[in-house]
Image 1 (tube, rainbow, N blue to C red):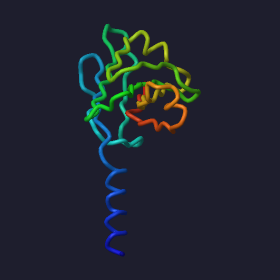
Image 2 (image 1 turned 30 degrees about the vertical axis):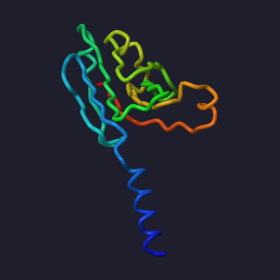
Image 3 (image 1 turned 90 degrees about the vertical axis):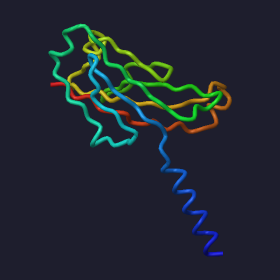
Length: 139
């Protein structure tokens, strides 16, 4: 009985800590972050505000394997006061002028992703967990 309990506990822990996906953050064509680990302290990108003057974009690419049928991925940009922008899909492209206009007084933006069911009835019955992709700190 103890062995069965131990195996069940181990399998549950493994299932909860399994890799959810991987993501890549690019700015003006340069890869700034590529990871599969959610870590708010480590996944920080420092960006010079002057680099937003030239044409270019911030691109967020979220890769999840395997894709869930009947679900859609959403990528959001938030500041300390709440959500600023939301985009459905695995890829989100924010042009530099739009990114610059999102900056508030604290000059910190956080990018999250979550999956939600397409069916509204099913979406109402589940709790959705945001995955912190990265924090953008502008100087």
